[in-house]
Image (cartoon, rainbow, N blue to C red):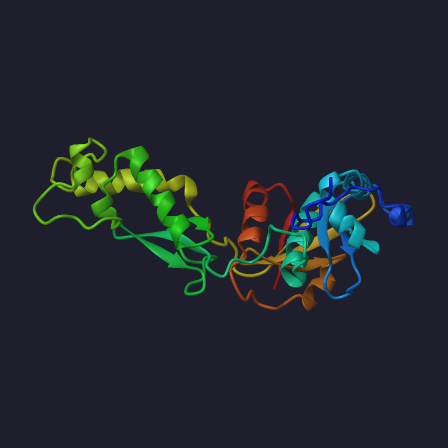
Length: 282
């Protein structure tokens, strides 16, 4: 039977023998690794692991990565003190270099959040206000549609009024349609007071609250590994870089050009929990 020429060529897996020599120098500790193709300025893939060697070997056995492995010409790596440094560096490099095969951790130009002001919810955009220092923001969403979908889900779960939330137009002098379906507790028609509705809305949003940057300026998070100590310099949840000693932190002064949602997600929990020593920098 003749093959169908219209069918796309399948990625047939073959062990990447041409990359075997690249395994030898790979460390068994944490860090970031890079798959390079023919272009030195545009990597194919950037990843991170607590064991670089083990993770790269897993790529070698992945049949669904055959296309990337065939295009790879060499593999480089950067060691870090631990997992936190690897996470931060991976996110930074992916945004800077836009690797061909990475589909996550790319900067969203439509990043937005729900904003609660005077008991009213609006959609706030990161390109217009600084999420790092603006209070009463909830959730991080890739676009306005995703934010509205989340607001609808919250309203459905807590029987909040679409009209009061601004999702639907509220009919003058009448209850909203969802009230007749018992999906709204009646803030639109006086069955529930505006204050009660506002309190339930605030409580429902609380788990999505974005924590404002809790320091006056830059800080250094100290991470100690088995053989390496690093200070990760952060300002307004934005990762500026890592250094080997605090004296070197002076050169990392550039201000954040945007709110870094990935940096926030990586750093917020360990920073607030006090998982790492924190040094406030001048």
